Image (cartoon, rainbow, N blue to C red; front, side):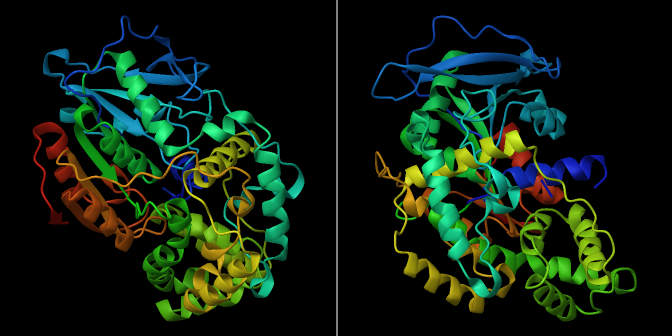
Length: 469
């Protein structure tokens, strides 16, 4: 999906985070009904080791919701400084699948305006299998472990031979761990409800970004009475027949929507980078280079997540053309990438059955390369899910309408395109704030003041409107 920008301190951090969470796809969840049982006592909170501004704790949840064995989830919080105005909890649901959310109360929550912080305790968590929540790994070795393979980029001319072999190896490696079978979106929604219960909250508000929007929509469908105020930021098509398979396909549309922003930016700086003096010329330069420069497409895809990485990508292209040393591209550490990639595959492959025919993928790649040349066939390419040995344990969720949701969406999002978000809006029957901006993530990320104000008004006052910003 869904699925990371994500250079100098903030820019490097933002880009690396986007890279870790591609498919992008990131949310929060509103929880609780009028009658659910409350936990007898809350979590045992202590200062987080990495940053004492947050408190950390753990919550036990079922490994398999049909059996009794438990796994541990890591959670965190920053309590409101004004308890007298507190409305409840704002849960920050990370994207990915596979992104850590334990420190999102600091990295994302503390960007929020004071009127939001006065009303909510900010709560973060690592989803099952991620970070400090009983983490998993596929134990990949050699080139298979390189982050360039987060997406399945075809070889020269669209050849998928290497992708087929790698997909088989990854599927075999990732399914050695039994927990992998229980990493699904529906189980993450169930885990969130266990977090709600442990916090002693009857209802939750949440802010989900990218894949987190789907988690949030699934939660509101499974537990509609446990939801307070829900913000879904950068959504994709929730079609239960396709889910993650469809999100990957949609990358082709998202990049076509977004690349003109980079092309216009680079054309305005032709004297600096020499990539072309018109957007069309920059596009042509990119297409010519993409067939010759290894990893350019993979790095550019990530570079489109935020305007802040445009200079890095333009310099990478300039240096590659000139034969100069290439600038360093921020990548997640190997252990973190292995964890991300394992959860990404587990979630995507367990939620829905993917096509199995190698010939089908090869034909789809050839067509996609002609229709969407910027992404070179990647969105239709074969992945480990084609060789996944386990069928989905339960059907994917058909999202139900909710009057508790406000959506916000950039019009030129490379990972979760605007046209796909309209499908989520149709399913939820929810109002959506449409932001005239590019990049992945809108609310206090790559959006604008108008969009930020609309979401803030909803979280603070419950004002829920559709508008163009």
